[in-house]
Amino acid sequence: MRSLRAGRFTYVVLALFTAGSLFPLVWTAIAASRSNTRLAQTPPPFWFGGNLGRNLQLAWTDANMGTALLNTVIVAGTVAAGTVFFSTLAGFAFAKLRFRGSRPLLALVIGTMLIPPQLSVVPLYMLIAKLSWTDRLQAVILPTLVGAFGVFFMRQYLVHALPMELVEAARTDGASSLRVLWHVVFPAARPAMAVLGMLTFVMAWNDFFWPIVALTQNGSPTVQVALTGLGRGYIPDQSVIMAGALLGTLPLLLVFLLFGRQIVGGIMQGAVKG
Amino acid sequence: MTDETALLSPSAVGPERPAAEGGGRSRPGQAWRSRRYRWDLRWSPYAFVAPFFLFFAAFGLFPLLYTGWAALHQVELTDPDSMTWVGLRNFTRLWDDEFFWNALRNTVTIGLLSTVPQLAIALGLAHLLNYRLRGSAFFRVAVLTPYATSVAAATLVFVLLFGRDYGMVNWALSAVGFEAVDWQNGTFASQLAVSTIVIWRWTGYNALIYLAAMQAVPGELYESAALDGASRFQQFLHVTVPSLRPTIFFTCVVSTIGATQLFGEPLLFNGGAGATGGSDHQFQTLGLYLYEQGWVNLHLGRASAIAWAMFLILLLIAGAARLLRGRKDSR
Image 1 (cartoon, chains in turn cyan, purple):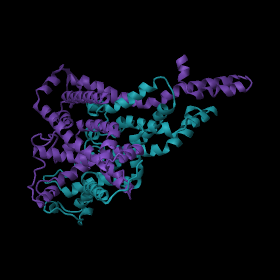
Image 2 (tube, each protein chain N blue to C red):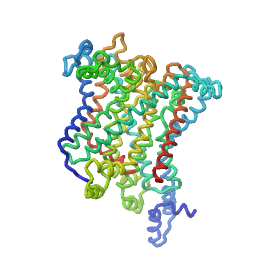
Image 3 (cartoon, rainbow over the protein chains, first blue to last red):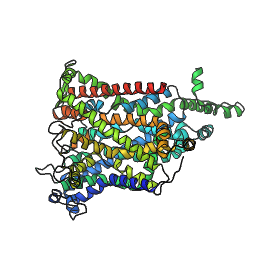
Image 4 (tube, chains in turn orange, blue):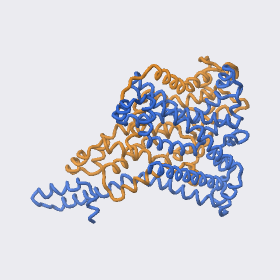
């Protein structure tokens, strides 16, 4: 790796990029703290006003944000946990175990990433309608519980991170596959499991297309679906809409604040080890 | 049988060895254990990968095939159980449907408007992040933050920023002497605005992927380029970019797939006016048109036909990319 020291120019450009990345988020908070009338004036506000509490409260009751947030936590949490668990199982098998057909099966896993979700949305809807799952959380949880990305991600990690000698040593001691999984694979995979969990959580939290098809605003929506129902009045109250957007984003920003470095590392790791 | 033993990992020899060393005492319990052990070795890999394939079969493969079947029927959302065979009529109607072609055109333009600048900016950004920086962790996290925002939240903010009368973008434009732009109703303007949301959300993500690839480029390449008198920019152009070609190709594929599926941004950029993609369908994408046909007009059969059309278009793009790549590699 080369390590040229960055010049002043680099810092200026990066600062501009950072500002561009963060500005819409900061401005969401500014707009959420103002009133609708103030937002309909020029110049637009650049600093916080005093209406944040009122707007948050209105968004909370207007779109049933409490329920929506709880639903989203349940959905994203379950999907993340399921993805991490099943992906580690499959990733371990593809990385370290030899079995007939493992290569074509792995190719099949990667191939499924190319299928656009739109291609399955009609039958999937018919399926959940038949099961009377519309508006129920399992309708959005089950179809996304395992994904090709997770399997691939765990495989790439375990290929390097899990020494074969460790697995063999456990085998020689007579450990069954399940014991190997529990005592050797899971401990070795823990860092990658954490990163995959966070990445999946973010993706599941932000998912929009399938939830808006499967969950109506009046049923039990996720935050993303609930947001679309905000401010539906004749003159939509933009400041309340922004308060809702803030509510839907804040939990994830918190996750980012705490684990940003690990998430960055995970994305970069998933990118190179091809 | 021979290739099966070859497939077994070397550790498969493990359990038999201690049994042999134990003086050949093969008690029935031990025999059963070793048989169970071999059974476990052979079948547990399949058990470990099974969940993925079970879920994929139920929620991926079956729907995929069934979409093709539904596309050949008239099915209404109100009564999904009754399907009337119509053959290829959904497809022929699509062929004559000006809104379909409009949506296809929009998808291509918005796709280009969002993907090309996004990847170009990401490449430059990654190059900057690759320098020895103070606070590099902060910059990396900061440029990735938009990735943590949802389509819904991001689009709602940008609707406000791009507001015609009081939006900040127009305010800034007028401050430097430009005329205000009608970001929602202008065809090109609205497509540019929708693309901006995509660019904002995904540039940092792609930059990190490029950065990872850049860090894997061997330093000697730069050293020898520097010895040959290449400037920093020439090094970037002649060392970095060629080394990154597989990664660039990969991000192009992923972004293209993402662009064909564009849905949330154009849906919500409409300010609650439904799935038409603007008063004149000026930013209605294929994904949004599919949603409108299926869940607003209730024609699930036609929505399925649009889905398959999208898939065919993706295959065409993939084929074209393969041809292009093949030619480059043979050079």
